[in-house]
Image (cartoon, rainbow, N blue to C red):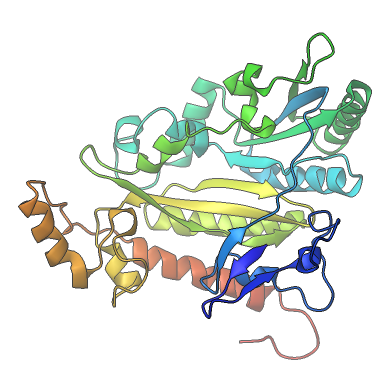
Length: 350
């Protein structure tokens, strides 16, 4: 990175710190402490230049989809991904979704299931059966020479059959034509062209899942970092789902399986015209106005400005139990990671 500091100094990190260094972008490590992390998601400096490693366009690529029908199959899913990681079979970070991802594609919640509260398990299972959805759906991609891609597929098939024989594994191979590389723009939408570098916003409408007809959707994400431990992942998901259902929210989950850990993004979708922001940020210091959410201290002024411009001010009077849910989720996760799973001979940390 090249970074402009608040005092006007410019620093370069890694091997780029050496003038005219031929390995400036080949090696991120430097001599002494590495400071790159100080400038990730921070305001300690302005990153003015950045070196990014890109992946060569492959001769062939294969999109792979792993589907599992039951909530409890999460344990098998974690074990499968862990083994594929250990054996260096996976080449990208698999994406994991539960059944609420396809459900949200049917339309806003008030149209799909108008009753209040979380969708009952029986109703969800009926929707899954009617639409042919699995409870868990995982996507990943293989790249490179065709024989290597086929070898990775064969190893994956054996692993899935041994650990979870009821699971369904589908795949599709894409090859370049006339000796050319794979053209990512030819990959059908249903086979994840994003894994070939094709950007999309087709899932952006999910944000309005819990918004009423005239509302605006928002989301709050709780994203714990979990090890490749099947039991703890299932325990976490069951507890997070219980808390969400208790507060009237569907358990909408998407995540990724990285090299040594998983991140399950538990997405709480809500109507962002509510005043829940005031409970989380009573002094209005966290990005006031971002995503159209104004803290109480700024709200009257903002409404006046909207009215002066001839626009309708948003109705900020409605409330939902979002802030209480956030507190309960955080408390439960703290108890789970520190209290129940603490090890050692000494007392559990508080």
